[in-house]
Length: 126
Image 1: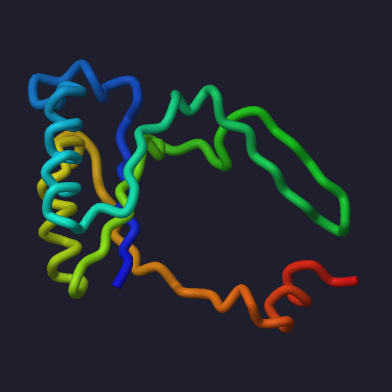
Image 2 (image 1 turned 120 degrees about the horizontal axis):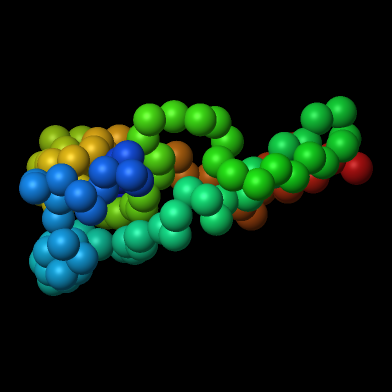
């Protein structure tokens, strides 16, 4: 089953704390997960200041610079993994180096049947 491990941290502190991971440690862990056959994808994200948020309300699009909401921790990156169950996904998440200075939210991926006409109709009403 696929699990998304969302890595959150306070950008202002991410690289300044004594327990902060170096990029090389994060890369080594990603390579370890890749070698285990569990990695589907992983990426670090640019600063939250580069974010743009899109909302559609009443058919009108609003585009705002910045993240969706002000929070103490920002989304810093993700790992998409293939794990046997939630326990295995949690074991993978607890070893993500950034978990020492932030948090990792683990969520199962909900599979969608994108070939179903009803899915397209719901996503793109006429």
